[in-house]
Image 1 (cartoon, rainbow over the protein chains, first blue to last red):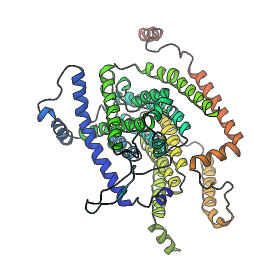
Image 2: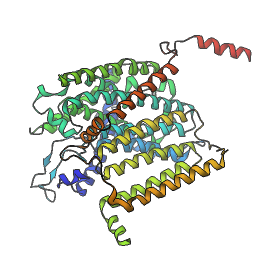
Image 3: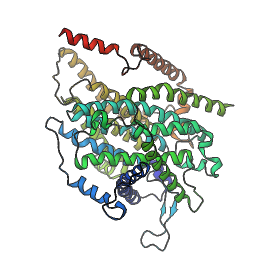
Length: 342
Length: 197
């Protein structure tokens, strides 16, 4: 591929190491995310949350992990076994593949005092595609096959309802995500995350959010729907459909759906930070710290919203998508293109 | 000839090409031969993703990503939505009523396949009508061809999609302004049919 020839520093060893690092760090972060989520929700509801296992309840993650790994892996009798077993893998895999194409740090060179890998140049993304934004969107779009196939294969009516809701919700909100990203991409003129980041490198004033506030809000709303977060978590809304697509799952296969969901939350946070909040500062020494803070803020924001807002009904979800968000997104694109033309 | 094959297998592109080819053909065979809706659907979607691999090998990143978004993200998901009306865990019974038609169509497809495989014999006759422009990316290249040479087909396609969308809305959206959950007239209907039984 031509990108590989442009950057001779990218070796297959480097790409492998990064892939393994992404897998390891994000899986661990997803586990930690559940802990943070319980704590934040607890504080917002004036409770303490998990407190008993370890200092401040921190070892709750380990306890949960042991529980997930040792639970019996039940496959229902009339289910389509192969598809039932593959479905959680699709959710987790697509979430991690999407993370392979988003930038998290600026490019850096490993200091020379570190043995073996000293002086190695490390580019910011595991695979810097020219069309990175589209690739990440496409991968997250194909993530809908996880819940969909899970619901259809398990011979359970709640599962089928969950799968139907998956198809409707993800397909509708993909449109909003794509249309909301289109306006900033038109201004920048590139689909590469590195170009998008560099476009906003002149401090807070050059952040995309000031030029495209409408697109930013639309993207966040659609991001909540695509990661199945609370105002829009109709796929497994326990008060209506037991657990939706995940009704029959247990143990690690159930856990994989949620690792995928948390990885997608991180991906949406990274895209929102890079696309609208300036991303990392390529020249500054603390670019990596600032982007971490931005990502953490968006992650916290998702938990905050979960604590503050109730679920909405499926028909309200569809009405909101097609009759409110989509017209706003298209008007936003029209105005943006008029401004670019004139 | 065989040494060429081994040599091409040793390069990254060659290996990826043969890997993707075998996987794609295998998955599409499952799609055609399987009697189970879920297997057919899953393998078709997976095959569509693997086809994008060929675009990536050729350096056409944009087309590869569009392949994933359009075929896997949109079209296959709509198929899947239609499949919800069937019991996906059971096998389907195929009834093939017109054997001669199947024979003719199968024969024509086979003929076309042979012609496609034989085409590279005259590879020197194949010239790119719109070669890649140096120094611009994939997206810009596709856009330039689309908005100069293929402008009218592009606009006609857009118009057809608009017509399809409006007719879809008119067909489906008779009671769109009424919320189905708040609609009580349906309750009466259900109650009446229940009483009649």
